[in-house]
Length: 203
Image: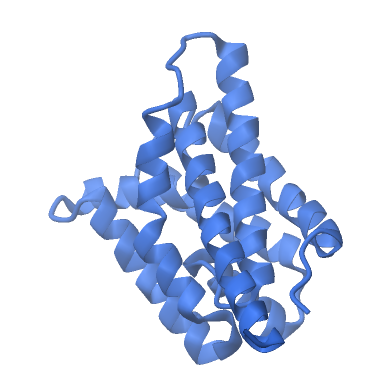
């Protein structure tokens, strides 16, 4: 196996591992039952308002629209990693969610949220760093980073704020976990992005 093939295989492995961490993070965050992330909150609220689509279907629709926009704006954000993320992320979500002990202890539930943020941020950044195509939301946000030279952390805060506003408008549920996720996830992703090169090398 030549070096180029080894690099591609390693990138694929990192992408799949990133998808697992991403799904695990969503599962732990959901198990906390303190409110979903901003995009999920909007999708759930909007789906209920429409009445003829499910939460899962609404999520798929929004992600497809994001991928289309990202592809038209900056093709390098979309690739096989994007497709794999959309197809496979539900498996680790279901697996890990069933393994997380349910609790009413608020401190433990907040800890779940923090672990979820860490896993989601790590998973997303691993997929981004593998450079085989980003997750739908990340591809959408990075299309602004690449075409308009905006800093990712600000794009993330603004996009999440728009989804959060949409959740309020459509009378969705916003909890303590939603607020914590909104405040900490962009900074956590930025911190991991700055340091991930020390641990992942593909050459």
